[in-house]
Length: 187
Image (cartoon, rainbow, N blue to C red; front, top):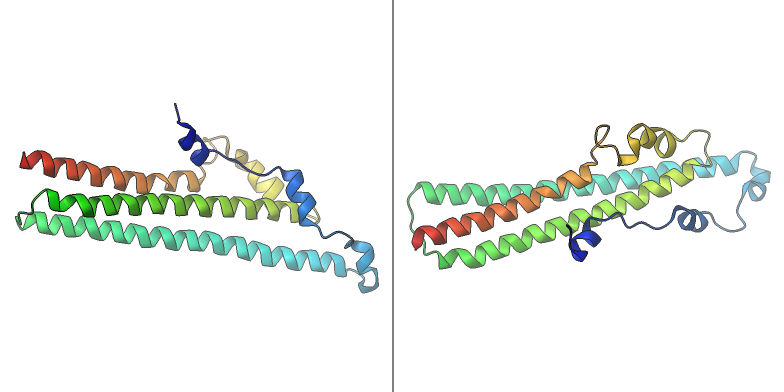
């Protein structure tokens, strides 16, 4: 049973598609306003579509870079702890409390950053889909997403954004477990 905070974090709270659609298209700009340019309206939509898909892809790339950064930091911490431990260096258990607390907070920040990127990417791809409504084909909005069961059928597709959020949780639990073991060994 999820708490209210966990439900808000893990939930799929999204703005209604019709509200996004209403905000997407500039009032008074339609094919008639491009009539003198021939197919200029469709060309403009296609150009904006290309640009927006590139922007959505960059959000995914930034999320990947953030994951790489945090994964590298956490792997380095575990490596350093193992090196110190293997050398038999004795450190008082109390000296572990602040660094572990900082690492757990860092894992929390990582989790919230992932959430933010997930929300941003979700909104961008919804807009991509709505732009596709004005194009001859809808490869993402109607075809690909439908082929993936709209992310609801786990036998077809597990959204990476939901899987990757467990990595910082696993690191935080590992840090707290390590602290517990160190404190228990000292007692």
